[in-house]
Image (cartoon, rainbow, N blue to C red):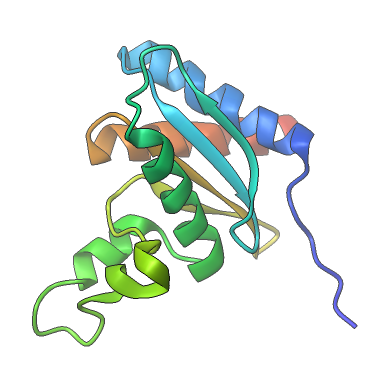
Amino acid sequence: MLTINRLDLNDARLLIEGASRKAREIGVPMCIAITDESGNLVAFERMDGGKVTSSTVAQDKAFTAAAARKATHEYNQACVPGNLVFGIHTAIGGRLCVVGGGLPIAVDGTVVGGIGLSSGTPQQDIECAEAGIEHFMNERA
């Protein structure tokens, strides 16, 4: 029998709070998705002004980060013609995302969920995702 650690709704709210605070700071309204360790959505927020298309992208980034236990920008770096992983973004009905902005959330070395942001540049999305994780870790300490 397995014991599984996963994010709950209060955890997801902390992650969104930290990410949205950073998004306001940089002036980019974001779509923010939080998933559990298996990539299932726990919470989602589309900030006022967040791009409509970014709703799905943010959720796919969070799904990829949690389920694959890897940051989406790491897939991006490896997903080039000639590499064995090239084309992975077409897997699972195109759900695996290779655009930066999805990060796995680990507690005590175990992935417990994923965070995905979209509406800014990939670097802005990553910054806001990192801010969400940092806020979550500080609040649970």
